Image (cartoon, rainbow, N blue to C red; front, side, top):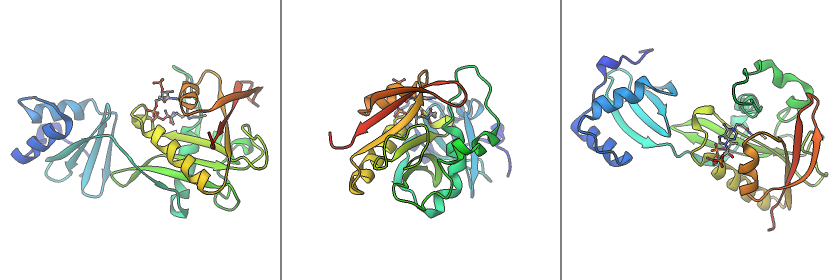
Length: 238
Ligand SMILES: CC(C)(COP(=O)(O)OP(=O)(O)OC[C@H]1O[C@@H](n2cnc3c(N)ncnc32)[C@H](O)[C@@H]1OP(=O)(O)O)[C@@H](O)C(=O)NCCC(=O)NCCS
């Protein structure tokens, strides 16, 4: 079953009750409501026997063969420590971490192969300070935050790991990034680190996100592409 056919979407009485309860909605026709969500979906992924349909912070689980909507939940990813088996997903999250100003075209994927960018993931796990966490939704990794001690844009000193973070676009703005960052801070403290740094383009809305998480702007510089960046540092002991 490689596509969802809107006319075939159905649910069971129990499914309808579960969907209404989980989402706190009061619609009389859950099937029509689900069809609208599916038609306007941000993302639909087929994983095993189910489709997972993402729309505005909601995830519908739809059985692929019967087109039955089994359940719906608010987006709330599970956070866990990154392991070796997660490393293949790092190129995707490195690409997603590249800032694209509103209305600008997405850069080509091979951009991440430029040495000053690839250094954030090259042989990840091989050196001190290589620590990370991932966010999982329905068994799929939807976000990652990781640190390294590398001579990159956000390097502060040899004792301070530099952070990179991103989520799939459909999952941004629902608090998952905040949960990822807080878990990574805990992991860094447990590993004896006292600070963590990062570099961010000045006009990236993520600057507000970092300030809210306790980062301070400690410097400014111009990157290789001519963008103005902030160097930001978070004191993990505060
Ligand atoms: C930055 C990011 C990890 C935050 O995770 P999140 O789950 O979206 O964040 P939360 O919901 O916990 O917090 C919301 C904040 O995230 C930031 N944010 C939300 N959407 C964003 C986006 N598309 N791009 C950048 N930052 C974004 C904003 O600061 C927002 O705060 P605001 O509502 O005051 O504007 C995530 O939005 C993302 O992947 N952005 C694109 C990649 C990126 O810019 N990475 C940082 C490179 S230095």
